[in-house]
Image (cartoon, rainbow, N blue to C red):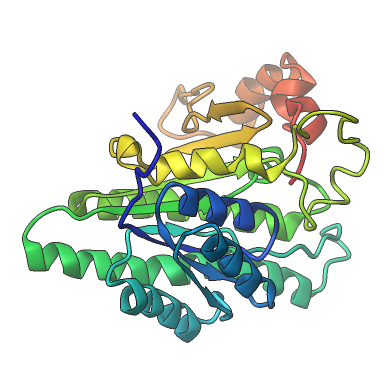
Length: 302
């Protein structure tokens, strides 16, 4: 596939796009020909939109809060009104409020779940409704792409980020559910788990120094081509997938599989029988198999 112009004429929304990953993704989609709504709360959204326009592309800024149901509706409506259509939604907006679970406040939990998980739902809900109505009007499939943003924290647990890990796990569930719901309309829904050096992850990767020469393997520009690909016509058969991406590497995660199965010898298990069956099984497994801590999996939070 020739990537040049593969998104020509298509309209995209990128949330949290004033800097970091979102900025790189918005620029990538514009480079591929998409017209972009750059969403972020700060003034940086207009700066990125201007950067796209200065390079010959089409872009407008939206300063709304995607975690607000009404403002998310306005965001989707703006794309359709300004560009006449919406084909691509990239959900990237997020915040961190890191703390161990025994010290976390209710506000810290709610804030992270609100921005990450509810923010993903809100925009998805209105984009999905738009595509469903478009499909009903034409009587066939439409062009729709959603790329969500999760994290390896949902796999590894990330001990100091219970709110973030839970929200990111929820986004994976939202992705697979939405992929099934929208398949009949021709819409694909996938989720990426990026590792990238951004303002939000500067503490996470503080010990990983960027190289003196060459491209930083944690640069957000390593992530944005995958987003461009998943948004493109070439990815029409890819949906409901979870992909890890960083530094020239893309890994496809498998759905959870059954590792072992135990059947009772009678009508139902007792605690004693479970002790006889499960305790020896786990005693023989290595620590790597019984506790998926980040250092065990070789994953970083972020």
